[in-house]
Image 1 (cartoon, rainbow, N blue to C red):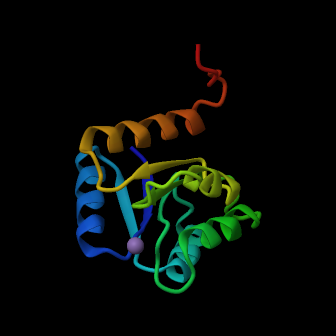
Image 2 (image 1 turned 120 degrees about the vertical axis):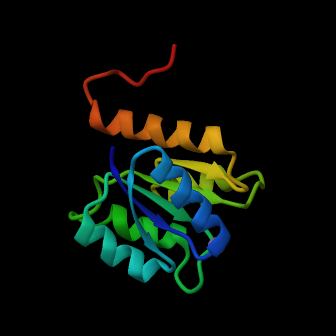
Length: 132
Ligand code: MN
C-alpha cells in the first residue's frame, strides 16, 4: 500500500485512475492543476506521482522539472500520463525528469502493473533493476 498523488485535469480519467488505485489498496491524493499538485507533493510526500502531461496553465512536464529540481520532492518518482502517442514524446518525457510514462486511454492491467513495478523499484533499492 502506498500514497499516490494523481495530477489530472480530465474528470473521467481522474475517476478511473482513483478507482483503479484504490482497488489496489492505495491511498490517493488528487489535484486538477500543476500548482495544486506541486503544493500537495511537498505536503503529502507521496510514494509516487502520476502526472498528466497536458494540464491547463503549467503543463505536466514543466511541473515535473520543478519537482525534480527541489530537494523536498526530487526523490519522489513521477510517471507521466500522456495521450500523446507521437514519436519523440518519450524523449521529451524522460528529459523533463519523469521516471516512466503510461499512455492514455488507460489499460487497466497495464496501468496497475506499471504502478506496482515503479513502487517496487523505489521501495526495494537493493534489488537490481537491470533487465535480463
Ligand atoms: Mn489533461
